[in-house]
Length: 608
Ligand code: ADP
Ligand code: ZN
Image (tube, rainbow, N blue to C red; front, side):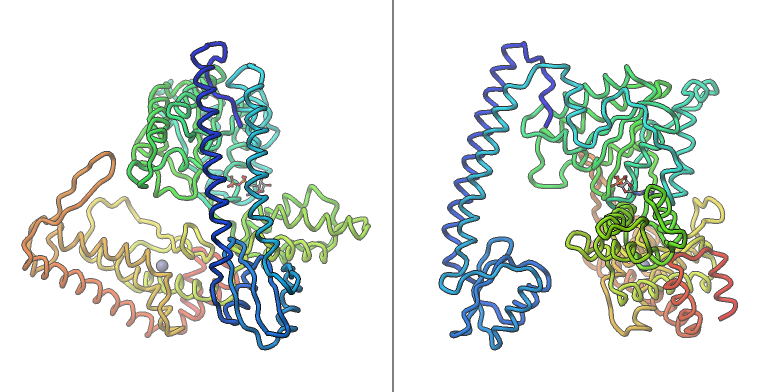
């Protein structure tokens, strides 16, 4: 925790600080009281669940403890979230075995859940005591250079601003596209003047977009290392405090320091915590607004030749305030995706260099077994493997250690999301193969540049298209073609698995958007006519749309949108049915290689 960025010698601030501490204490006391009230209310309300539900919950690892009464064949217990349940069991010994195998606490027969009550009472109490200690320590903290203590007290901070990071692009495997984008900025940081000599103005902010652990922080650090400039790590949530004004003053202090040290890199992790769009949540705090405004003002304030590069990282760019994404702020987006097969092998190799390995270790086997693993997961696998080897007192890490490390890191408790059932991979493979195949047979759409079953965003895989030229005017054929391609995913899933899944949501959203636009503002529907029906207004950065037409027209509009979408779906169905063996070949190739280039796609389609 950092100290506040105010002069502690100022008595006014001292008073303020005292007031804040009191407030914190009061809030804590309330929380504790609340928890205790809940804890006394809970045991009465044991939920009746079926034995199947209980086994399922045990499988999901959400059961905290169990009390099995073999004579009455009744079970009581509690979930990890504190709620209590009861159930009847036909075969108590089997249940007991299952629970033991899962490491669930089994309590004595007489009174179930006593341990839960104990925890419920002591948990909050211990919390309160810890909080008191923390408060006491904080108020006795020495004055010190305020900014420095804020930045360096951060647990992931690299020492201090002075630090020259020894990292380079060698340490970052995969993410080739992101590295390519980064090179320009490294040149800029190495020699800020040379760009402005010619009048060029570089963007000041880069936005790294990708799931956790994909190496966004690592990449930013490597950029600082390559350019040999200072690096500051800040987490967006560090700016968000309970007290109005603190976040904003932290932002200002940070940028003041950055100006002094320029050229340098400021890395704001979890930017969304500080830069959420105004009006995104009902409990939007004025503090957040001030912090956001301070970031915007600072980014506008420094001259682009000053050599400060702000890199923001987020997993959810869609929640960021639109103002952050305007030119001169975080206007350049760089996707840092989960690694595909090749990248995973490369990442394993980078981390393999740090351990002692047998000569014939085969990273490609591990890479093949870890489809959804992030860079951090892979680093963890190598580390776990080294621990296994150490435990068995081996002289080098062997293949079996790597396999064990993989099981430990992925199938162990935390990273279950990295383990994707085979069935799900298959669905994604057919879905993406569907988009790709339709794109090949529908005239007038952009060629496929790459297709992958490794997710690039919150949903499944992705098919990437390469626009042949920059298009500003889209023909009707192109627009209907795009809709047809969007439908290809669902059509392929239905063709293969005869079942709808949630995987087509974004496709439908895109297709609906095109159809709406064609009908409502592009005059492409005969029945609706050549008129613009949408009025857009912007208020506080959020755009709202309203439909400007009579109820009768509205009905026709709906019918026309549906007609466009249905036609696209039918066309996609025809293409897929007529080329079923090509779909099969593409999907199988995707399952084997995860990523296919446009050229590979052409070859597969030509030979299937
Ligand atoms: P993020 O900021 O995207 O959450 P990090 O950069 O903190 O991810 O990654 C955590 C760790 O995972 C890194 O320190 C590194 O050890 C490992 N890692 C992640 N991506 C890569 C990569 N592309 N190459 C090598 N190691 C990686
Ligand atoms: Zn899709």
